[in-house]
Length: 301
Image (tube, rainbow, N blue to C red; front, side):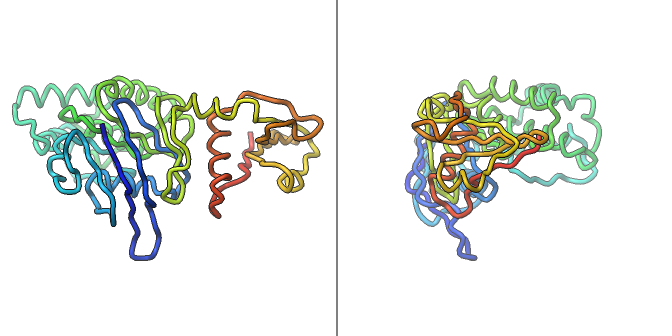
């Protein structure tokens, strides 16, 4: 169990990245969903002991994380959003070196784990190539491999599917699903599909505050019979926004589709549909009344 109480963090420029966050996270995959700049990376860096909070506490499996950061690091696997690599070092050599740093001193066991992770992340055939020459997607896969070294009890991955093609994303999903059964795994992302595909528990965060918490299914159920849509070439979105809680709009050719949250039919022509996690997300951002919340999501399809 990972327990976060009253966690707050402000930077020198006056930005409050974390604002009194309280969360208890059990074994399994936990999704942290929010827009860019919501505080997700600050939250992850603080949990990873890379920066100190201004106030609050973090405990994991009896460890006071802020007082005993080295004890947490022995059990931590972390994939940050951006990470550097050593030049002129092969994937195998670098992963082997990182394994030693994580305490894998038995040569045979270390080699077996390193090769297995290179295989699982589809990097085995590139094991002799310098990581500095890898594409962005290959670097993300290498980052996933290093985060899984030494069988950590807590894994945190920040925007892990950035740069991965559809096949790599599926492989990534399967890998994380397999390892998350017996550990705490936190997945931080702004990609709604990642959360819906992988996580049994989640929180929506914006401007350093938790807006919603629960399983994707329970959060969608809370909005049952409240999401309506209408499709037309002549939709006046600005007018609709003045009267209704417009969640998002999408453009398909000349047609526009608008999604509205309401306990009753907004007006003639609107049809009731099953809520999606995207509806939950946009509703949480709007209801939080933060200035940066995106009220209408324009997409071309």
